[in-house]
Length: 226
Image (cartoon, rainbow, N blue to C red):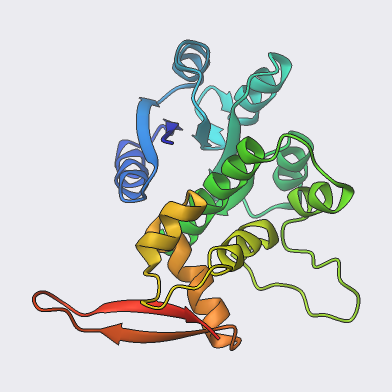
């Protein structure tokens, strides 16, 4: 599954950076770029993107105007606000408008990648789970909250539902181990996302990892259930 992204940013250099960042991440493609709120409104309606990367400050107004218009249409588009605004007010309005994330400029690629991969994991979970238990709903609404008393919260970037899917990938015996790419295919995520969860489980002792040397090419890191 590939997700379409509309970039709304009036600085062409920053917009190009965000386009470059987006296209580096598996499962995303840029469907358009708008440099004004008027163009943004037209392109949101025409392209119906899965995700909007939205700047806050424009010469003609605030990007939150576009956010509220998307919400008023009940459009199935999520929004990540990207801004230099560190004040509480814009953050509060963004939260009320239901933004998926809020990233401060200048944007560093690791933080950008984390936001988009978390969005992708979230959408894939929603597509896979048509009937939800209360626990699953809680996990979707509070992705970093661990609901098991007495246990520590999961670290940032580790979602409980995705973690469960990675564990389930090792439910059957795999004598030759599984690579990050193979696990990603099983759970419907990228190799990068799968590797993050695999390394988390390896660090916790649930999995072990070995470098497997083939006849040609670089060695491949394989993971094994303990």
